[in-house]
Each structure stands twice: as C-alpha cells, then as structure tokens.
Image (cartoon, rainbow, N blue to C red):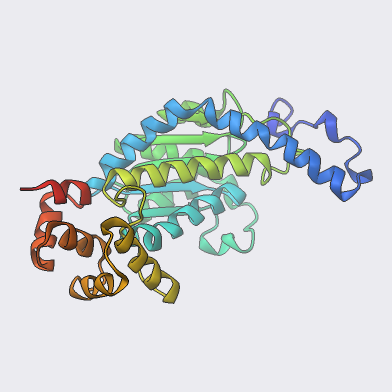
Length: 299
C-alpha cells in the first residue's frame, strides 16, 4: 500500500486554495513567487551536485557513461538532457543516456503502469550493458518510483556510482543511492503536479550535472562550446563565431581554418592560436585529452 500523505510533493499549497477562481495574472504571479523556492532548494544541494559532477567527469573521460533514469516528467527531463548533449558538446550518441519507464515512446505518450515495476528498471540497465564505469542517476520527485528504485538497486550491485534527484526528504531512493540531491521545493500550486516546481528544480540539476561534467572533459574553451556539431546553417555560423571569438581572427580566416580542420572548431582554434597546421593541432589536442587551453599551452 502506497502512502503519499507525508510527501511534500503531494501536499496542498495553502496559498492556492482558490486557484480555480484566480484571474490569469494573479495565477501566474503566484507561480512566479513559488518558483523562487526552486532556486533556494537547488542552492542548498550544491555540494552534493558537485560530487556527482566529479563522478560523471571521471566516468566520461574514460569508457563510462552518464545514465539518467526516471518515469513521467522526471524520465522526460533525463531524456531531454541526454538528447541535447551530442549536438551541444559533440559527444558521441550513447555516452549520455536517458531511460524512461515504458521506453522512449513514453516521452510522448504515458505508458500506464510501467513505473510500478522494479524489474523493468533493472532490465533496462541490463539491456544497455551497465558496467562499473558508468554513473546512474535516478530522478523522481516522489523519491519512491519503483522503476527507478529497481534500477538504482541493480546499479549498486554492479559497483557503479549511483545518485538520486528527488523532491522529498527521507525517501526510499535516498537509501538506494550513494548521493541524493533532495530538492524540497514545497507543495505545488496545483496539488501533486510535479511537472511544475519539482520538474523545474530537477531540470536545473540535470543542466548543472551535464554542463559541468562536459566542461570538465574539455568540451569548452573559456565559455565557448567548442565541440558544437554543425548540423544546420545556424550552427555553421556559430562555429565560425566561436573560432573568431576564441582567436580574434576574421570570418574568412575562421572559415579557412574550419575547412582545414574538417569543420572541427577545437582543431581550428588550436591551429590558429598555435600557428600550426590542422594535423599538428589534432596531435596537440590528443595529448591534452581534448582540452583546448592545455593544447595551446604546449611548447
């Protein structure tokens, strides 16, 4: 028997008992006020988030992967973060993975009952051949979703690092994971609708984990996304702009350097700043494990 009565995420918000009578401006004003709780909740967990980032950086530098798993909104947020890593950071597909109860189709249409099975969580991790080099992060506002619990418990047995992102204190997931980020944002304005404050807080933490880990493995130079993948006209121009910003060169020089580097912005940047050909720039980057700053510091 599931008892939701003691969960903050299921409590009624006393400020919105007349939600159905509010004018649009009044309603969204209180939403905006309540969202302030999100910032404070995330701030209180920064030390824990940083430790998870350190795990992920080490894992991604090697053969490991970052794996999010969740159900409903939480699962969709993990999938979204995973899907955005290849175009933003040039990381190969499969390096950051999002698992959602019910499979990828559940991103669009809910699969009823899928989240209630611990076995499915374990099976999904088995199917992607989980190893001790990976990091598994379970996401669930309630902190008790069986699908995620099953995955975390199995992941723990493999010896890989496990983290949890939840929105209640003292949850079952906190017992199953090594580190639990507890984002207690308070009752939602619409009772139990955790796609609101809880979902926003979860998304913020996913943003922090993936962005900081990718910076840690060399996917940024200064604050430029130097491994951006050029899949459309906008991103082709962005790559040119990134090379120009990083080196101070002209657009024509950026285009020429990118052409010689087969479109790879990091190689073009190192080539220009080091005054070397693209092949030597690639070698410098390889020695620097992909970090532009270290590559251009080489004598």
